[in-house]
Length: 175
Length: 212
Image (tube, each protein chain N blue to C red):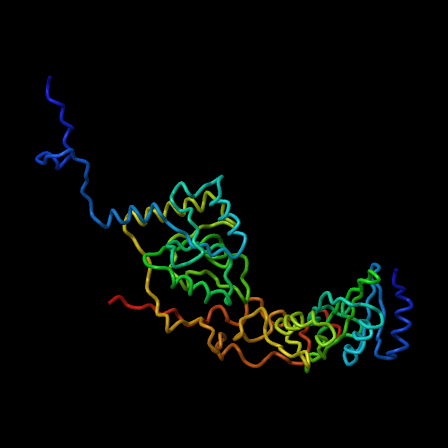
């Protein structure tokens, strides 16, 4: 049973009003743009009412150095992108929400989709986006004592000296 | 009947009786002979170089010809560390720990560009050469090196053992720099506050548009 995305868009706009910023389609892939304040409500609605029961992925985009013409329409510095799948309808949906630079905060959706837990930790580790309400927002890829968020566009590729400033390894002199 | 012909005497045996069959050597050379013909590698394979290492160990290239086929996944039983692949700063403490656990004497091969120099990964997370931390005997160039290169490296290690050379050093476990202690990897001078300036970094075209 194919999902009628026109119907879904209408229903979303009715339910959430101005929280739904836009509905776009790129090469047949629908994308919903929502305000970050209502991301939890929208995803809960999509999970329960629209039967998007599977969380596929969560990622983040830093649009810091994009030229103007490539900037997203509702640009804040970060775009958090959610991908969800409906096994019942055989449909996929992309949801984008826009997060400012300071404070880079958005509500966690790990309470809605359990699969978002580690994905949010990764986005936090790499981009420094703080997912409010996350139960265990620790680094997942970088070492625990690492500083900074390396996938931010203003983070130098060669780092800020992490790999060069190791204390020297101490040799035991031979007795 | 004539007397049974005597076996020709070995050097140094002329005045001795018996059937012969011994040689004299130094105990160290005998031990080194044993060591170089029974190298047991500890594979530290983290990337595509490890695939070439597997090819070297399997039947086509057959590292077993040189007595080095017994891959030991326990460092306690191995004496040749093969670092094959890129090592991140999160992985480095593990590598040093395993290296320290290997019994003396031990040798180390840094296999491929990434282990030797960081390779193309000149990035924030990658160690630029494991020789900053552990002593390396032989470096293998290549990305990844062919199995012949690894065999050549093992040959060089065998030469080193034959000559009685050793590069192993003892390291102070208690002053281990990369233990997971709450130390700042970044020095204070470069760390600073998070870079949240609130302004976008400028682009040439964009600045001209704003000023013009």
